[in-house]
Length: 311
Image 1: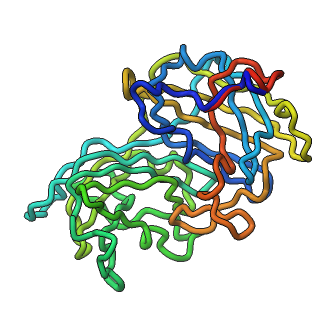
Image 2: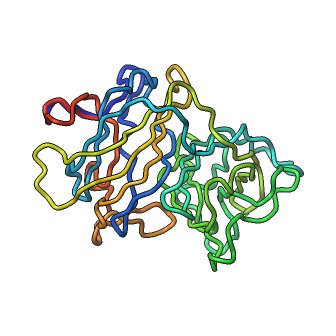
Image 3: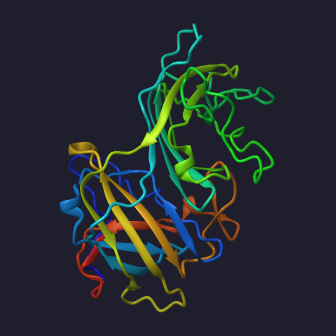
């Protein structure tokens, strides 16, 4: 199994392992989703022929598949256009950055964001209890920032507004970031394409807006067409299904996106709430390295654990 290798990314240009937060959600053993982009600094041609490894809730490697070329592209995540000042806002805040929107299971989206210029009062000690939309970052129903409308969710299947608890926190450097933020909207990811993303200040006022749109594909489309048990794994889990691997961006921003449909995954991998906290039989998976992970590894051979490598 040493040949599967570690997680695959360009460590010269990428300081921290970008695969660490990438997980699947499979409360019933079935896992379907679209990840946000994983900034690896690697192109499709560099990913081609490497291995993709699935982990269980304890972080154990349970399945492995080789990444090969495919003919057609799959569904991709969404990302925001450049933020602009919300129409009518006259304050001093000028938000920049981006938000990515993927999907875990049908009707549930996953957000990852990095913002600059958001409200510095939205810090870790801010008292915003009872203030509607305070420090919020939400998808709205409108198709333009001139008419953004209300929060976007399917009220026929979702009884309470799932965007209310979704907020950002500005750190000491003036940045706000988040990952694995799960929001049960009742809509598919395609339904969010073309909608608006609105950022609010500490008073709940709308200060910035961007359009949510499909990501642009670079490089050849890849996929994992089948899985085998990871060498040396003796547990009962047996992964089947496929994973599409697409490249978004170029150069140092070259990223991979995984679109997966799996059966036989670990049913202990589930999401507890819209904040993105993942619970594993009562324990947060953030404390378990690689728990519920689905990651590209540097190796090229699933038959020998020595060649799979790390991320």
